[in-house]
Amino acid sequence: MSHGQIAAVKVLLHTLPVKGTAILAELHRASCLDFVLIELDLAATFCELALSTQDEERKERNTRNARKAYDSALHFFQRLSSAPADQAHVYEKASRLNGSFERLGLNASQSGFRRISFQIVP
Image (cartoon, rainbow, N blue to C red; front, top):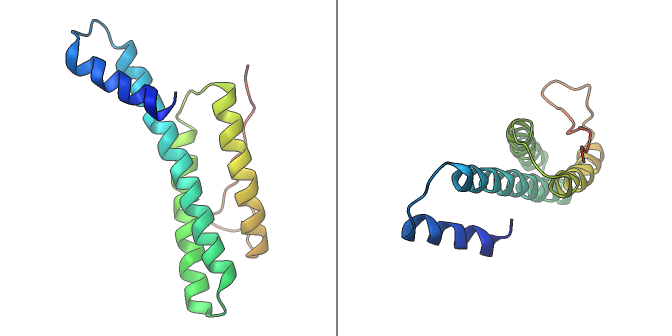
């Protein structure tokens, strides 16, 4: 669901009586997916900052912040039922992010670091 479609649903919610929860459920799912994608973008930004600095304190702080954003995305993504196209979008962003974490010297066996992995279900 695009941002325009979300806006249209919000307008409908305010102008029409709603019978049932289907519209609200879809709006919630779309908002959660947006949150996951934004958290992955935020993690990527912190990784870029960490990789671009020579200051060890800044590198560690930005790496920590990237991991927090990544873990937040993982937490919400695991609870989200999403379409295969949405899953593929998340997986593509997460794969790039995993590469950034590896360049920072992190791997899945380190404490507090988890990879996003899942099966894309049609």
